[in-house]
Amino acid sequence: MAQVLEFRLPDLGEGLTGAEIVRWLVEVGDVVAVDQPIVEVETAKAMIDVPCPYAGVVTARYGEEGSELPVGAPLITVAVGAAASGDSTEDSQAKGSGNVLVGYGTSEAPARRRRVRPTPAVPAATNGRSITAEPMGEQDDGNPAETAGRDTSGAVATGRADGSAGTAIGRAGAHEAVVDGPVPVISPLVRRLARENGLDLRELTGSGPDGLILRADVEYALRAAAVPRRTAPETAATPTTAPATTPGETRIPLKGVRGAVADKLSRSRSEIPDATCWVDADVTELMRARTAMNTSGGPKISLLALLARICTAALARFPELNSSVDMAAREIVRLDAVHLGFAAQTERGLVVPVVKDAHARDAESLSAEFARLTEAARTGTLTPAELTGGTFTLNNYGVFGVDGSTPIINHPEAAMLGVGRIIPRPWVHEGELAVRQVVQLSLTFDHRVCDGGTAGGFLRYVADCVEQPAVLLRTL
Image 1: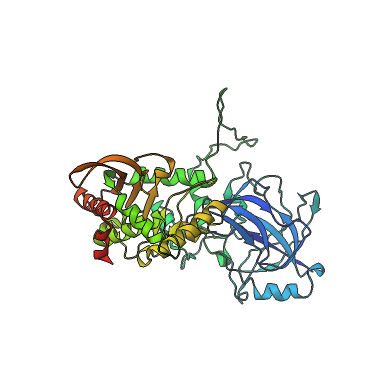
Image 2: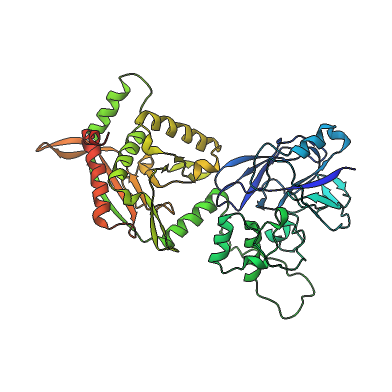
C-alpha cells in the first residue's frame, strides 16, 4: 500500500515567515522524483524553486498561484511506494532527499517512530480531481502523517474560518499533555521569539519531528493569545470583512518585497536614534583615476567599487560604524568583517544584496561581485543568503538624479553612506574658481554606537579619499 506523505513549506531563510506561490511546476497525478522542483515561490527576499524530498505520485496541492502560505503550511501530499513511481521510490524515500531544507534532513529516517491516530478520509477537490486518502497508522518522525484529503479551495487548507496559519500546521499530538523535561527546541530564533514575548515553551506542543517546536508554533500561540476570549459560544462563524474602501481609493496589500521593506524601515525608525551629516566633495580626481584604470587594460572598474573600497578603508579606521546594538544585553556588538550591502532598485522593489567580506576584496573583485549581484537582483534570482548578513550599506541614490538624501539605516546595521549624483559645479580649486565634478555624500548613523565626532571623522575621511585618491594608498 502506498504511504501518503505531506510536504510542508520549509523555512526558506532567516527572518522569512512565508512565501507567495508564483507557479506550480507539477500537477496532481504527476510522478515526482526526489529533489525535483515542485513549485516556484517568492519570498520577501528572493524567487526560489522548492524541491520535493519524496519520490512518488502527487495526490494533492495546497494553495493557488498568487496566494501566500506561512512556513509550516502544507504544500503537497505525495503517495510514495505507488506502482507508478517504480521500485526505486521506496529506496529514495529511505535514503531521504539530498537537497537540504530547514526541517527536512538528508540522512536516513531515525529508528524512533511515533504513531499518529488514524483520521477519517476526507474528499479533496484539487484541480478537478476528487482524492480520498487512506488513514496512515505510522510515519517517520521527520514528517508527521496527515491524510491527503484536504480542502484546497483557499490559499491554505485550514480548520478555521479565518484561514490563519496556525491551523495549517497540522499539529500531530496537540491533544497530549505537557510533560516535564527538556524543551524540544533547536532554533535560537524560536527561543528568543518566545522569550521576548513572555511565552513558556513548555506549554507548547511542537509540530516538527519528534514534537520539535518550530517558529510557526510560537507565532501561532502568540496570535491565539492576542485573540480576546469570548464569554459565550458563537452560533456561527463571524465572516472576516475587508476594510471599507471609499470611492477613488485603491488599496494595495503590503506583502512580498514591499511588505518586507515596510516592516524593516518601520523597525529601523522606531528602534534606532539616527542622525545624519553630509558634505560636498570634489570627485574630479577620483573620476580621472577610474578612467586611467579602465584604459590600462583588464576588467573595467566601476565607480561603485571604488566607493566601496573607500568605505572599507574608512571602516577600518572607524570600526564603531561596523557594528550593531544588542539592547537586550545592553551591548554594542562590533564586527570584524565588513559585509557591504548596496541598495538596488528592481521591478520587485528595493532590495539590498550583500557583498560578503568586502574588506578583503580589491576594486576589481568588488566590481565583478557588484555586477553579479546586480544582475541577480534584476532577474529575481538572489538567494536569501545574498540578501542577509550585511554590516554596512552603501546607497547610490544619485542614479535617480537627486543630490542628497537622509537614508534610513538598514536594521540592524549602525550606518549607511549615501551618494548623490555627480554633476559639474563651480568650485574653488587651488585658489581659483573652476568647474569641477562635485558629489554630495551623506552618512546616517546610529547615535548609540558613536557620537558626531566619530561620524564626522568617517565622512571626512571618505571625502578626502574621493577628492585625493592618493590618500587611500596609505591604507593599502
